[in-house]
Length: 304
Image (cartoon, rainbow, N blue to C red; front, side, top):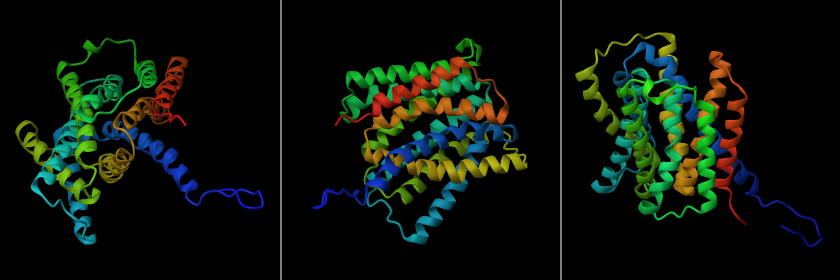
């Protein structure tokens, strides 16, 4: 704002707006990347369906109790509740369970990261016919650069066929659920209360995976410190906090632009693996990180 004496002052909301625009996507990328680390730490102590069933049960209990305590509004119609449940079945029950099963069944981490990195491209392809979102040629260039960057970061010189077929299938199903669930949430979840809608989503996911745990697994859990720590992080910080950030961002921006942030997840995972597990990082990966960042910048840049 320009004053009468020629000086300028900042708009009162400008600072908080910049924090939201820059800080929230960065926090989402960081939190999403820790999900792979949490799975790596926790899966040695519980089978995948059992692990995610416990996670969903805890998250549902916390969210239901919180929603009741603050008297948050629940869906007014069965149709609204049904849409919310579908999102839970896709994003939580199918995507998260698919990733956990893929890792538990022998897929190398680089394959899981690579297939998950396809999510922005798939979302952009589906956003046009489903949400009527237009992706410009400039943005398509950004999507391609982002995916190439992800491939450079995660590829280990091995063939995709080296992984067990069931692990690849689980990852592919999870990828499809992530993209379709994100688009479904963008179209049908814009008016629901985030507190009660997430409680319904966790309950729907729990209803999906619990029978699988009883049918296909022993349900034996080794309650070690590592497992409890991983479970607490995945439940409190990711299932509740991270998905709240994701839904808030989706309400403010185009689905294809939000999805492009996922190009940055594999590079951040590679950095975390370098510091936490001593995994090697070379110039090829560094170049891939830079390329992925350029791709995201091209997709999300707003023309004045």
